Picture 1 (cartoon, rainbow, N blue to C red):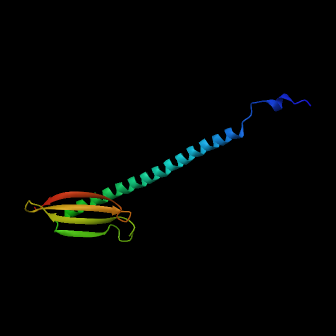
Picture 2 (spheres, rainbow, N blue to C red):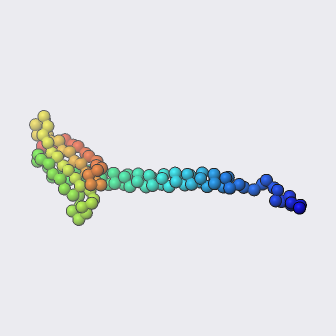
Picture 3 (spheres, rainbow, N blue to C red):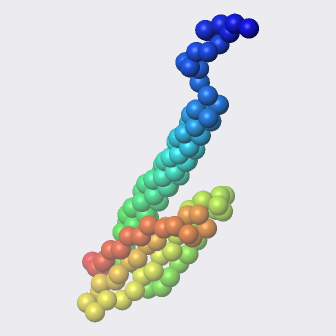
Length: 125
């Protein structure tokens, strides 16, 4: 029996080589998908942090426009129609300096798991 040279060729790809290539590709794809998911989470956090900072700044300006703040603490929702949105906590406390109050404003999101805060000293005019 004569075997053709084309069947004796060593140029083919073995099953082991194919399996190694598939494994390497799979690891690379899983890493790439994880990277995409992490970047989406970071983008969402960044967007919420920016929005919370802008809300805090607006609220602090509103407090300044109202005049000298009264002592005490206040909590609530930024948007009463959206209970899953942003919430706030405002604390006005005395300072050692007469007629100067410390205003601490904290804006929360994700059920108070994350927050941003601003503080300001306000003097009586």
